Each structure stands twice: as C-alpha cells, then as structure tokens.
Image (cartoon, rainbow, N blue to C red; front, side, top):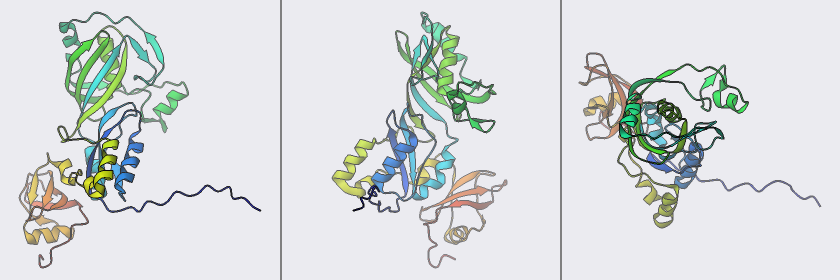
Length: 320
C-alpha cells in the first residue's frame, strides 16, 4: 500500500471583482504585503495592491487599492506622509529602530523647551538625508539591507527631502514624542538619529505610526479584526461599504467635466477640446459626474488627452 506524502491543497478562493480604496490600520509587526494579502482574502478581491510599504515595526494608515483603484495606487507613492513618533534618546541601535541590536549608549541630556525647539528648527524645510543601511535602496545592484546583514557598510549619497512639519507635543524622561509631516523618501529613523545628535546624544525610533498620506488625513481606518467582524456580521456587502471611490485618492487634483460627446470620444482614447488648468493632470468626469479616469491638459488648457481610464466605464449608447 502506497501512502501519499502530498499535502492536501488549500481550497481555492472564489475571487470576485471589487473596486475601491480601503484605508487599513496596519498593525505593528506585520509587513505591508502580509497585511494586503489578509485584507484581499477578506474581500475576496481579484486584484489588489498597496500604495507604498510601511516597515513591519510601523503601524497606521496603509491605503489598499482593489480592482480599478489599483490604477491610482502608483500616483500615491509621491504623496506626503504624516507620522506620530516616539523617539528613545540615549540608545543607538543597528537598524535605527526598536528591532535592532543596541550598539551604543549615551546619557540623555537635560533638554529644556528652548534647546529642543532650536534642534527641531534645524530639520524643518528642505534638508539632505543620508539613507540608512537598513533600507531597500539598491547600490551596486544589491539592497542596502542585504549588505547590512552581511556586516557591510557602504557610502551613501545624501538625498533631498522636505520636512513640512516637525514638533514635539510631549516628552517623558528620555522619550520624545514627535509629529512629522514630510515628503516622500524621508526616513524617520534617520531623522530621529540626526535629531538626537543635534541634542548631543544618540537615539532610535521606539514607536512609529503613520496617521496621514496624501489626501487621507481624517478618514476612518479599519483594522483587520474590525473588517473580519464586519464580514461575519454583515457579509461582503458590509465590507464593500467601507471602500472609498478611486477618485478620492486624487481629490487635490483639479477636475474637468465633459459633455456627452466628449465623454464618448475620451472613452475611445481620443483627445477632446476641453477647458482646464494648462499643463496639468486632471480628474475626468462625465456629464453625470461619473469618474472616467485621468487626463492631461495641453499647455494652453484647451485640449484634454486621456492618460488612464477606468475600463469598467462604458460609453453611453447614443453618446457618439
């Protein structure tokens, strides 16, 4: 008798078409991709993507895009971010955060309000940052974190970033609370290390929570547990109701509304005469307010070319 050693296959998930943006409250300790896959299975979404990774240590806002909304996911990669941070002064770690090994200890000096404000002011506005070794940037074809795991450190060029806001709403002993609003590409670990140095000590990120990304600042974010409870109590209809429309990601862009004939031509990929802000990308809407996609205005603002369309939008019979 032959005994099969094959593991029983998991039942296939019957995926479905789901469109919209989910504002996920990612827990600490979970990678962004793992969080995406858990949410995708809850929704049974056929197509899904996220809008830029959060470190496993970090918690907070992670917009996930399902279906047609994946077409705007890449446009949020350049969005500004906002974080609530707890910095631990007096201790340096190998990774710049609480997951690394302690590599140095220094006394945390007494910091009065004037000294702290002076240090914070040095990092507001455009600054140059040297990316940390424990980052996903590539150098010589290898990820920096892969080199760091081999005990190697290589020279990294400083990169320009912008700190729009940097304040400290509170501190307790050698722990400092920070609020940071910054441009894409900003490393909070590096910012905390540099700030600690400006205060005459060393430091690392103890806690990191993203509280805003691009246009998403005050909206409700959902934990995986809350989404599971919603599905159990109200089914997939209850889950779908928490999704935001794709154009909410572009709410800060100007909009152009087309008439019936122009709508039909645009959905066939044709440029049309339309009035809008010269040289800018815009949100395109039909005469009934239906979101058609993204367009590019000519320099003089008199002609619109479609750039990315929502493929589930069909021409209305008789439009053309």
